[in-house]
Amino acid sequence: MVDTMREIERKYEANGTTKDGGLPDLTGVDAVADMTDRGVVTLDATYYDTPGRRLAADGVTLRRRTGGGDEGWHLKLPVGEDTRDEIRAPLSDTLPGTLAALVRSRVRATELIPLVHLLSERDVKHLVDADGALLAEISADRVTARRLAPETGEPVRWTEYEVELAEGGDPALLDALEPRLTAAGLRRSAAPSKLARALAETDPARSAKEPAQEKSARKKSAKKPAKKPAGDTAGDVVLGYVRRQITAIVALDPAVRLDTPDSVHRMRVATRRLRSVFRSYRKVLDRAVTDPIGAELKWLAAELGVDRDREVLTARLAERLAEVPVELRLGPVAARLRIWSEARRQGSRGRLLEVLDGERHLALLDRLDGLLADPPLRPAAARPAGEVILDAVLRDYGRLAERVEAALHAPAGHERDLTLHEARKAAKRARYAAEAARPALGKPAKRFRKLMTGVQELLGDHQDGVVAREALRELGVQSHAAGESAFTYGLLYGREEALAAARERELPELWAEVSRPAHRAALRR
Image (cartoon, rainbow, N blue to C red):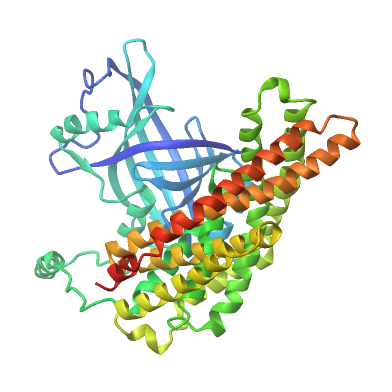
């Protein structure tokens, strides 16, 4: 069993004038009416990572800690500036399986080892409002850190200050407190976490006593602006986009396991973007390498889609049902829809977790790492980005144009539904190609992406209606077999048909705008 909480905090360090361990009086700042002393607690923590420090590289920390009111295993996942999700499991001698699963996309088959030991003497104070409600906790931590892998000699020590909001607290309070803290001689910590600072200050390669002359030269060198590259190559642009999608897939794995809202959708989109860019930029990346990986990405997207498609379909049917007057809802329609959806969810959710823990998924992640480590670049990858990237975007646009024209001339009914679905997939590919092209083509690529998104969304809504009609027919058959009225399902089916017809009528006008030559000409400027 685990508990998850959102942690919003800021870390500070002394700027050289602050008395070690001193905390300024913060009463009177914003809604802070009192600052109460909560005493000193000793926290003993061991941090774990792979020998190559895969967790630390992504800003993830995993520790076993004793002392304080929350002793146990803690996993912290970055969310945004000042914000992390902390997942807690009860204290045990070995890493709980629930937390092991949450780091699997990063750790995989690599052993986790004790990396750093931290001992902190924490002086805690609570910031409360006039009613005594907790607003935030501020603490001064006197930290002693020792590296365990590899073992180093003397430990390092420092004092760190933390301000952590109470659950549900307003982040604006952190901004309000900061001027008082800086006036007292504190500054934002240069390290994002205690672990990051401990690793930096116990680095075996770090010189214990750097000569003053070398130190001065290093500081001057650090201030020099980096030399601006002559220009990005096509390989730089495409690999930059590929790297972002791979990072998203790995980072979203624990979110999917935690059933975080929208995580399945975002992970699925990342897999689709990656597969799409492999196909769009085949002159940059060798298809002999990317096609097999793309096939695995298609498999993963399909597995993710089982749960995601159920979510989208259920939401659509519920929305349509809410539009039906009560007197036309004959039979237990809402209850049957809920039972039908939950039955599909139970199977899909369990299946998805099995997929994420399976060897096939972990092997795919390893192959993606290998792709970045040794990119299969073709000769065009070395050329200036603009020309190569533009050709790929226009090629995908041409493919979309052919499919839209085919759909516009297809006979109404099942054949048109199929051609519109194929056009939708082409629009999505053109959208992702333009999205990847932004660093090379600038704002015109952003505007072109928006046009492609408009086409995709219209065609996507049409396809969602096709799927909804199939589900409504299935529900109608089930209700009829159970002796219930199928009237409402037929009514909803008819409404979905009308909505699909409306989207088909909108397409010619939308496409006339999107296909204007001026939009493609803008990409060439």
